[in-house]
Image (tube, rainbow, N blue to C red; front, side, top):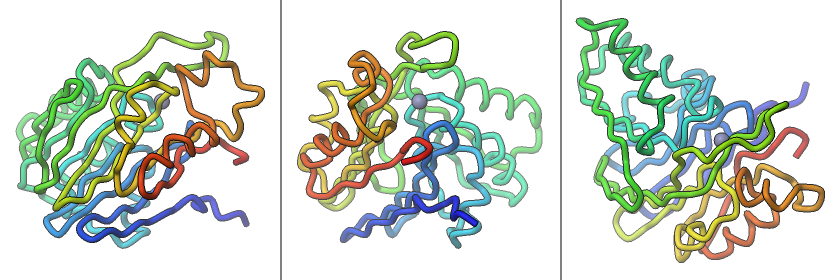
Length: 244
Ligand SMILES: [Zn+2]
């Protein structure tokens, strides 16, 4: 049987470690980044709890969840994650960071809170982050970079631009850049430049056969992702499509 989690990738720096729990375009994405104080998750796709448990990662180490944007393959596991934290009796506050105006994440959190108004043992602090805003979680400095990302669905073509962010995450002089889903936009170079690791989406295998508009507004191809990745000291490609 085909190994369906063949895309699992890890990276270890001096003070930061990365574990790509799962990343497939149109299915799910969640990436674990940790230091000695704890971990943050980048996105929470469907299957998050299963993948954390399978990879022997302790969900109690998670100090915050940071969303790149609101598409289903990035937020589909949020409700389960909140339910799991409630079940195991988390008491530490949980920051949830999402691009300002990301209705999917805001409504999922509101919905969870309204289902269990009296029995959530931890405080959920929802942070709607703005472009270039800097926050701290687990002694990691997290800076948001706006990227250009539009949905694209059968029968509707390319939709309007949605709130979407890439992030630079730094700790003790080490920096990891995460593109999130994005078209080829100018802020990507600023995001990746000089980082110790860039985690870049590569939704399409090749640029050939994909329209210029799609590559600018929806997803990168592998060749464009590598062009951005090479601005960092090291890079890994994620969020590939089926068949890649
Ligand atoms: Zn997306």
